[in-house]
Length: 332
Ligand code: PBG
Image (cartoon, helix red, strand yellow):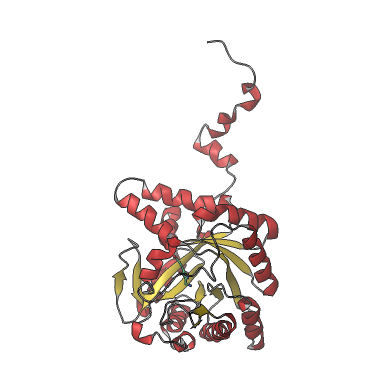
């Protein structure tokens, strides 16, 4: 065969892919354990580990077992764990007072983790949905989600979490002005080191379905969250929200869901350069697990590829239910 000249002599890109060694040398992005935040579900009781049917491989744990899991995560080098409470329906009310009960499930779990695993960062969720009789993230008055009254409640919730020892507060409610209000209240209470990771660009997504089962909010929720969570059609709006939240005192920002919104991750990182995280949400997790269980995809490979994609898109880290599996794999 006659050797071809142009354009190959200079354009032989395959040289850079010839072996694992060379591929390693030219690799632009890597996934490490440092990139992982592990979301976990906590429930009442003792010694309980209960599977979440719509999220194969994920369990709800009682406080004692959450503490144990956190210690294991710490030992594997996972930098942060994020708590979501499965609240007993009997504790859901109109005024959501359980949200700022210093001894609620989430706050008890924070203290237990701090004892068992003092080095792992504890992140919390701030929104009223686990405690709200109608499953919404904010108060509902005459069929509308009211903003400012909700923010007052969220501030109380934030302070209770900070008091219990939370390192990173994660407001996922999408009300306006909550970051500024929380930052002010934290400062006033002397919690100068408590960080805020704002769910700044959170979309009204159908990918949250399995999560709502996991925290027991599916049954309670009436209607949808479209008057506060973002329209999946929008991208410029995400930048404006991120800018606002950073200005109000957020230390880090999040885009949620993850994989369908990688374009937003990239724009946010390029525009602000702030610590940027994506949440690989329950629906994304469930899709990968379901296909893997059916033998339709290689679950492990898809898991790693999906997480590496977030790094390539500019994210500094990922909230993922796969965190322990990834940590185990990267260790071995
Ligand atoms: C609640 C909250 C949700 C998630 C995190 N915090 C659900 C929602 O907004 O309805 C979703 C996480 C996931 O799907 O994994 N404010």
